[in-house]
Structures are given as C-alpha cells and as structure tokens.
Image 1 (cartoon, rainbow over the protein chains, first blue to last red):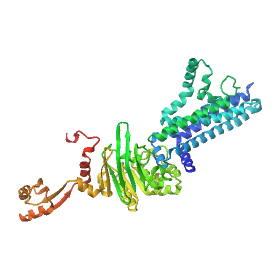
Image 2 (cartoon, rainbow over the protein chains, first blue to last red):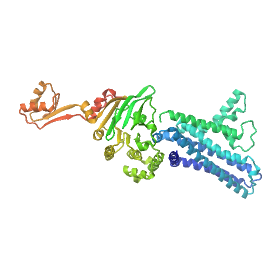
Image 3 (cartoon, each protein chain N blue to C red):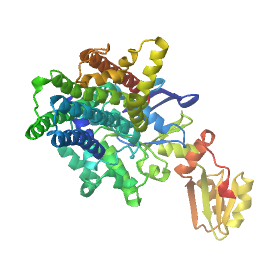
Image 4 (cartoon, rainbow over the protein chains, first blue to last red):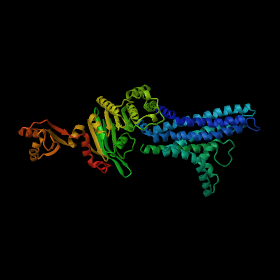
Length: 253
Length: 305
C-alpha cells in the first residue's frame, strides 16, 4: 500500500491543474479574510465572530475546489486512459481506489488546515493591529466552526471523488459537484418539504447538512447538530465512494 | 509462457471474443494477427484483467494476472501509447508507474536511456509525437524487467529506423528467453521478427502455428521459369495439367507442378533456362487468404475504380 500511496502522490502533484486549483483554494479564502481583517479591523463592532464568519464562509469555496481536485484525480485517469496502465500495474482495483482516495483527501485536508491556521492567525493579528478585539473565548462556536471547515473540505473531497468514480467524466462530475449543492439541493429540499409537509427536511439534504459544520451561530433551527450533520454528510460522501468503487471494480477499465 | 483458455467477451449483442484459446511460448516473438475488429485488442485487455471477460482464464507462467504480486516485474504490457497524461513529463510518467510496483528510481533513467528519450525526459508528453510515445510505452514495459511482454501495435507511428529498432529490441528480448506477444498490422515486419503466429478472426482462433507453416499452408506456391524459348514449354505444361501464366515474353509462372517436373520437362525440350525457381506468396497473402471469411469490415472496391 505504501508503494501505491507514493505512486498516487506522484500522480497528484505532477499535474499542473491540481496546483492551480490548490493555489486558488488557498489564496481565495486567505485573501478575502486578510483583506477583510485589514479594511474592517478598525470598524466599530468588528469582532471575533465576524472574522471567523469570513474565514469559514470563504473556505466553503475552497472545499468545493478541493472536491473538484478530487473528482479530477480519478476522472482524468479515465479521460486520458491512464487508468489502464494503473490497473495493469495494480490489478486489485480497490487498492488503487483506496490509495488514490487517501492521498487526495489527506492532501486537500492539509490545504484546508493550512488555510484555517494562517487565516485565523494572520487575520486576528491584522484585525487586532487595526484596533479590533479578537478573542476566541468570546465565541465558543468559533473553534468548532473552523475545525468543521477542515472536516467539510475532507468530506467535499470525498464526495467529489465519489462522483468522479461513478461518472468517470470530469465535466459531468464537476457539474454535479457544483450544481447539486448550489442549486439542486435547494429545489429538491423545497419540493420534499411541500410533498411531505415537513419544512425541516431540506436541512437533511447532504450538502446542506455538511454546511452546518461551519456554522458559527448556534444551530437552533430544529435541524441536526453539527456533529450529527457532519457525520451524516460524511456517510453520504463515503457511500458515494463505495458505490463508485463497486462500479469501477465491476466495469471494464 | 502465456496460456489463454476459453476467453469470451461480449459487448452488448456483439461477441467480441468467442471461446478463444491459444498458448504463447517463451524464447520467440509470437505475432498476434487478425483483421480490424477481430478482437485482438479486446483479447489483450481481457488477458490483463482490464476488460472483464464473460468466461475464460489467462495464465502467465501458471498464474492469473490478478494474482501477480508485482505485475510489472512479471508482465510488461503496452496496449496504447496514448495512455499518458499530456501534462506530465516522461520521467514523471515512469516515476508513478515505477513507484506502484516498488521499482527503484535509478531504473527509470536506465529505461529512458534504452529507448533514447533521456534528452527529452523532462518535456511534457503533449509535445511528444506518436513515435516518441511508443518509445515511452516501451520504456514502461521494460521498467520491471519482465519475463513476459505484450505489445499492441508497437510500430504504429514509428519511422523506418524506429520500426527496425523495435524489431531488433523484440527479437533480442525473445532471444533472452522471454515470452513476447505482439499484435501488428505490419505483416512484413511480423514476417521478419515473428516465429510463431496466433491468427484470429471475428473473435475466434483461425490458426496457431509457426510463421513458416502458416505461409506454407495458406500462401500460393508456384514455379517460375525464365527462358528465351519459354513459349515452347506452354503446350507440354498445359498437357501435364499445369496452370500456366505468362508473366513476360520470356517468363512463365506455373502452378500445379513442382520444380523437378518443370525442370525435367525443360531438359527434354533441350531448353536454355535463365531461371527455374520455387516461389511462395508472402505472409500478407497467407493472412488475407486465411482471414478471407472473417473480415469484419470490407471495402467496396474503391481501389479498382
């Protein structure tokens, strides 16, 4: 397995597009957070909650980009045909799927961790230097929300990887990854609410539940708690990977 | 040794490979021939477990491919030189391949040197020609120094020097005792390097034999006579039941009699002969005759128009 992990790591880091997406995924939340801290740090009322909100809000975009990286890590193999030499080199396909998944999820989770750490440390320092009062003790949900952002990124990567395994097509997988959480879930949730008469059902849409990982405000809307929602989203993402693995293992390469 | 037994693969209603069985022995280059769409590439993919066959098994020295611990050390396969990420360099392509089977990085430089790509090893593969990709594919095949080598159309896109190079490489590898299975449409090349043949058509085995016996069995055989008085031989030959074709004013092609019979007949006529030789058709002729009923796609005589 160590050999496979090395092999998949080489694959991941030798594709320029992955670096471009990773740089955007790191730079976008950091730039927005640090610029906000600089320009709003001296504004009256700017506080810990505001800084954390900006950081965790923008990291959702980073999580989505990490999902794209994860999806493309497998779909590009099918697109360029490199999946054949890959499976010829390692005939036990599930091992390859596990190794690739581990590498891409660990890599994107590390990215999210770096963003959260730098974003918070640099952002709080900048905001403090501009006169704002930043203290994690002021907002008990700040640390869980930032940790949740890292977990959300990991699960988004897992979900993207699952979509990639199932569809084997980069445009299709990326479209689903973007359209489903941003548009489709809202529509499906609303429709289910009307049909079932339960207006809370939309909160159980997988990505809507996942987003609850990064919420700072206390979650008192009758939906699942942060941990339950996160666990649920993670289970769905893992389910997608399991379904994709089964399909890849069964089909012709 | 490769043993393919009862291999069957279906794509929807189409039976691509139909209970195919053959063996490939070590020490020689075995040509894998068949018309377009006959199932050669599908067979090779099934042999490596890339396509899931409905039935059948392929054994590499007695072991199914799926059970090989580090396959690149046992079997080197090049199915399509285009199976590369265009954004990677040749060296990085070989690095991930080597890493997957625990092959040392020093081996990468060795195989790049072998295939003559050292100077462009850092270039992105999108800048590679098909011939360069074929060389890179062969480098991948040689990475694990495997005992069995499977190549699908390795000469595609190669220039004449490259074609000769790959022929020499494969012949050399076979002489080392390796098992070499090569599919190719370049029958003249196959005639030069192949010793054994597996010929398939419409997914079924047509013939497995040596090149010599295949040509012997399927190709045309005739006797050529060249003489200033060749015309005088036409009557006696025809009377003896031979089929005579006048190739030139002084040259006859004779079917139905052998060299000895024709020579004796010429001696009786006290003819001066400039040539008396046995002629045999090419591997291409034999192949076309053997696969005549198994062509998947046939043209409608455009060349004759």
